[in-house]
Length: 159
Image: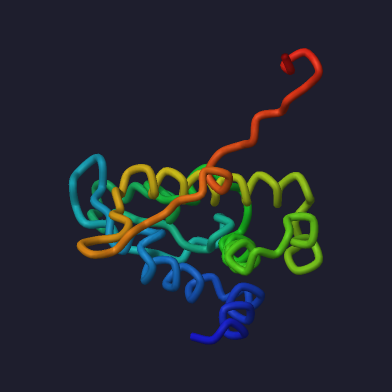
């Protein structure tokens, strides 16, 4: 899919297509079991929810519902999934957070929080997924000024 197509999807308001996009990328579950009866729930249209869909238990004696966002990256967010998609695109393109409101209908405060959440998720993933740098026969040189903050030397610290 081209970048333009992602933007069109995010702006389209086509809730089912946006949900399916996030399901394809494992950000929203593709199936869910009912907490009450352990029956496999189905995704059903539900206009009273922002996303337009919920997980619904098919068992007539149960019929419980859960948010389409349950157990997902988006669980505690009030922003639309379309806005999330657009914000993720801007974040991945390294667009400054101050410019996001030019592309996505969000307040600056909300955009800052979303960018921070995306950074936190990436940091967590990097910390919990060890990666090897280099290998047999290759020399890796890391400049410490790139990975650590420079210490400030003030008048009280000089000898």
